[in-house]
Image (cartoon, rainbow over all chains, first blue to last red; front, side, top):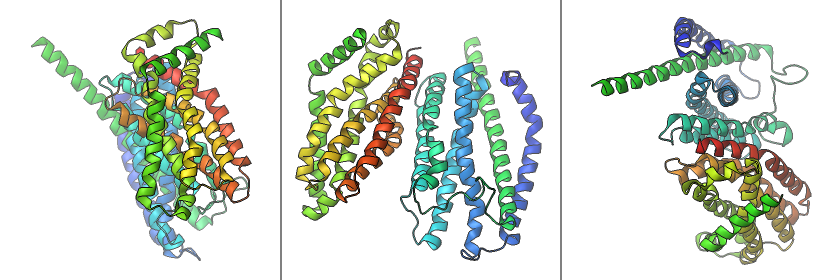
Length: 240
Length: 221
């Protein structure tokens, strides 16, 4: 972790890693979409609408996963003052907000034919909506200070406070009787979802994860370059 | 312990001498609740149905309005830097400030709530659940708000930002506060919801001081 703390070293290895990530993401998302749309069987109850699940569920996992990444990076940034952790948390937030939005929108599009309504105020939906607002609050807070380090530090504390929402999202379907179906993949006693549907879902989930990694690396690289550019400009204006 | 209460007294004195902190919060609370009968119509059945929700949502907003003053004054005149140097741990100071804040906002809100419940024709069975729920819930609002207020010190457009940060965190309090009243009225009993509110309060009391103190430290760094 501390070997990676040097931004130059990070730029070097991320430049090497990035093409591989792009190719793997393209292959996985391509194969996953093909599996989800053409290979996976229609559900006996939901019909073809079940295919929304192959986007909705990975997006929902990513929504929580990205927040966890953000919270862990924030903790690392607060404890060790790791310079890259701050950037990672800051750059992950808009991606997480995007995944959360995809999850909410695809869920409500699925909800209309299945539940007969776009939105219900059940515990899972409400807690994911709160997650979305936590992302927005984090982004707003980080950008609200004239001094960027101040914004990062404040954002890190907020990200850690907001992490209490993650277990609430995960267990909301167990603690309350809700309309949203309970977990069928990550549960004690193995998944209850049919293998013919599980495989496309897992390929899509892996594709989403690599998509996030690729975008995060790209965003971190451009943030570092922007910082370097700013420093060069200041140097130039001081010299001139 | 003595220092703790000295700090509480200092904040109370400041709040009372600057005048009208508590009165403003209560005034906002009452006025906003009174707007609802004009907005949705004065039918008692309708008001009775939504009374619990109106009172809790408005109390949330009233508490939110007063949060900015929690640390802002001390931050602007520099006394926050002196407070950090006190032998009393910053975490305890956060608790003292929250206690003082609750005494001038949460407590008056709790005391006025039954009067507003009367205006909105809330079922008589709901009153104890309303009072108990507010007594347990408003300290949580002060505590969670302290984190937001500390994080927003020195931020641009701090007021709007503060509501964006704090309102999502307030949602559980709102849910259990209203659910307690509805459960009591429908005969199920408010006990589980009040116990959950109490659990939230205990958790907030234990964890909030560390987060808010961390936020204050980085604000004066």
